[in-house]
Length: 473
Image 1 (cartoon, rainbow, N blue to C red):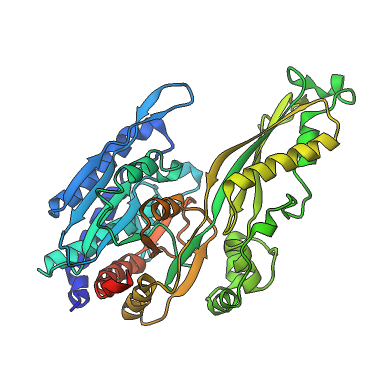
Image 2 (cartoon, rainbow, N blue to C red):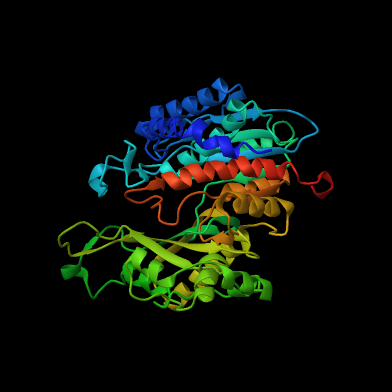
């Protein structure tokens, strides 16, 4: 039996779900702003208290301190863990989520106060509404639904909720490793809902790209120079830097990178064919007339399962409004390469470093080049034939009366790979965010429809997971 039929009246006709989301969005839990750290601590305490009041076994796990660039240290927000049920005869699922957010200000171009949840035409606008506060609350509401209807949870449910995801999940990897043989020892499956649908069709996510982020620094004169006085006499660091960054086609020129990519199988090609994706809508959403690829399969493949290089900016260059006739003495390019199976970040680091130094050497420049990799996050890929995905398909069919799209994410969710490598457990990503939620952007929102139906999906999913045969674990 599933409590779906009674769920709507329990949670949403009484507006409990929306009140909870409004209270959570009101906290400016911006993990990138050290001045907001007290708000972040309060957010973690609020999440812990919510789970305590539901009768969960809750801990606030101290994960240490963060060292700031100026050498000072700041306490990291504690990680909230909770447990509901410990029946050894049932499967145990662990739900991961985060309650920190990206920065947001009204003057950035928001139509409403980003920290005051605002309902406009069935959309709930607020920073963190979709990424990731509503999905975390939806999982909590799913447990509450069983409780409120006096129904036993079909599986044991554990939560891991962190507060530093948007800035790299400082301290979380170490905590997972430390609790591998305690908190995670009886976990069968891990569920992540920190992603979104690709279209109006519900989706299950089975892969993410990784990310290798680099700095390439070219240093020349001992100080910035006047281009009128010194232009034409010195070999300019900026010219060297632009010269080694490659051609404007966007193709990766580094030997060995494309050769390492797992080939596109016929089965994958067929999966991409079946996915609901409108290229014209996609172009309109981002405001461009032309894309790098004109057909759906090529576009999705290059978004999800092929590596890409992006140049993000140049530090040290003059970027303020107005004019300044300066020759910068030192400039640093920031660029990243998205990782896919079977690429290895350690190998990519060597390939990028060797390639840039070889190109730079050909310039015979007196300037100095220094290449540093500051992030090396691996990709994650799940087996879509796993019973977890069968359960996901069944839950989507039950709630939405349609089959889900099986999709990958172009972005990086490093914690998925950490969970996989450290715990050895099977993982599924089950998004409820809409394709147009505007994560990290102005006017982020979660629709009422996705919040309500997404919560029902989680209720149904717990029921489906409980029926997975123990022999198939």
